[in-house]
Length: 250
Image (cartoon, rainbow, N blue to C red; front, side):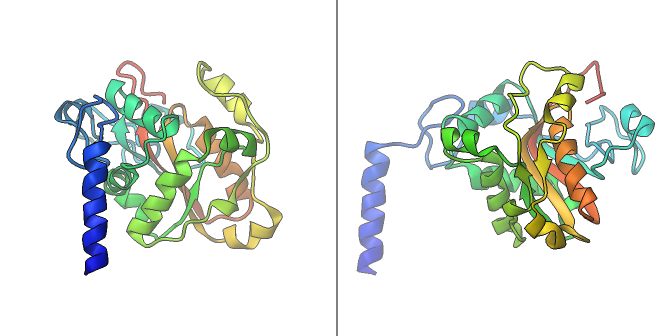
């Protein structure tokens, strides 16, 4: 009891000296990981009316298992992709704060949003596999944001977190500023299933975790070696995704 009182006292002192800050608005908030009202208002959560395959949100309600035009033309390797948020000015700042600013206090909240968006791909109790960073980039950044999200999601849903199942064997240049075709070329052959993990992947349901889905090129490049190693199904869940009002081609 005495130890708990000391811990509470220390926490109170730290909160006074180092108050919690909203990563989006930089306002003081009441708890670590909390967001200011203005940040909440700017978030766009994706509903259930989405392409059954790639998860692109439809403006109007469609029929069950509806596909967007691109997925009808060519089915992606990933069976289902789901995302919690539209990537907009607010979610962009939130994700960059996690990715480059070391804002990790809100990871459990972000994982909660992902769990709600991904209930369709979580019911099979998949192995949680984050999109890996190359060692050089991980050392520079100090952590892999996709792994943080994946670990928090696995803990929340009581699933196996298996980052060892996929390696990034090539330190690819950043995808920023590249079009869909260039992104696909950039990550082609960049990932592999380690030989020691082949038997773990064979027959497994895999859920890839990433922070943002832009064109889907990185996720597809990750799915290729997993399926080649015998994965029964590969799905994906991201915190956010790009949505272009004039182009539903991902």
